[in-house]
Image 1: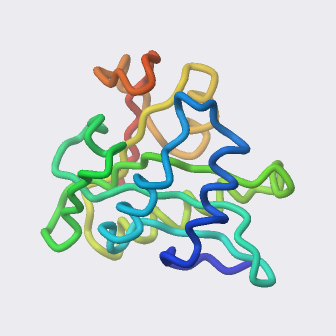
Image 2: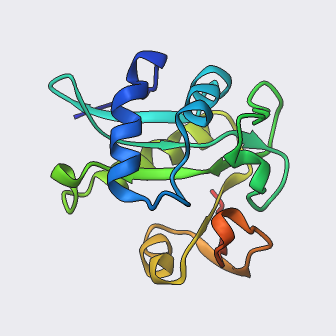
Length: 162
């Protein structure tokens, strides 16, 4: 298994995995992924085995402690050239064929390494209540209900600090 920075050539497979795992309301669009692939410099990672992408984690570096809905758009602004900030995860997704194999953990650990190497303040994300135990198991702290209104849903702010 190899984890590497995503490339524009990965777009079709990333979109396939996204649509396998998220509802039409929650799935990021092709144009958003394309913008993220072009803009996000250090924190859009894919897991690849024998040339096939099996999962990804992505999100821009932002100055805010909590994820902002702006990060889910084509107008994402990646602050990876600035010091500090948080990696703001907009998506972690694993292909159905590779679920329950620990790939999400591997992707999160790789993203934590990126955060450490680039001296980020931490990683933030939002999740549904049923995913709170999953992210807590991986070192994220629940900081309560989020102000995010993405996809018209209720979300919880989660933060990992090195």
